[in-house]
Image: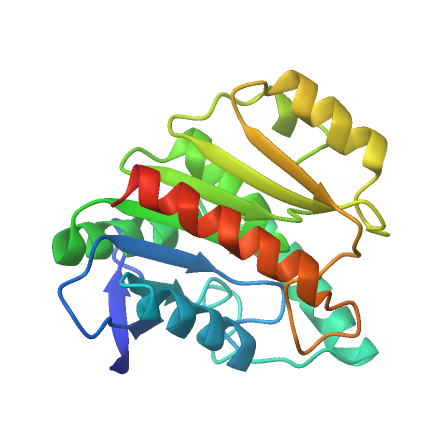
Length: 228
C-alpha cells in the first residue's frame, strides 16, 4: 500500500513524503533520500522495492522548502533545474533539509522500530551527513553521493554503520577521492563498480543492471544486519 503523508519537522515546517508499506508487519523502516530530481517515479519505485522487501519506506520531499511538487525527469534541462534546486536547498540555514530527514526518521521509528537511510546522488550526500549528524539512524547507505568525498565530508564521524556505492566511471566523483574517502573512513564499507554516475536508475542512460543488482544485494544484506 502506498500513500502520501505530511511530516512536521521540529521547526514546525510541514512537507509531504511518499510512503510505501509492506504487506506484513514491517521489519524496520528505510528513509529513501532523493536525487536532485525530486520524489519522482524512479524514487517512488525504489521505495516500493524496499516495501516489497518488508520495510516501511518513507521518501520525504527534500526540495519542499525551496519549491513544492518537484518531480523531474532526466533530460539536460531537468539536470540543470535539479542542480539549481540542490544549490538552493544546500544554501538553507542549518539544519536545512536535515530537519525534514529527522522528521522522516522519527515517523519511521514510530511505525517500524529501527530506521535506516538510503540515498541516491544528492540523497547519498544527505544520507552520509545524516549518518554523521542525526541520532536515531541504525544504518545508512549512500549511492554515488556527490560531494561526500571532498571538503570536510571525509573527516566526519558516522554515528551508525555506513555503506557506500560508487562508480569508477563517475564523471562527477573522482576515483582518487573515493579511494581517499575509503582510507579516511576504514569502518565504512565502500564498494566501487565498473559503472557511471546514476548506475542504479533504470530511467537514465547510465543505468548498469549488473552493478545495480550487486549494489542492491549488498544493501539489503547490510540493512538486514542492522535493521532486521
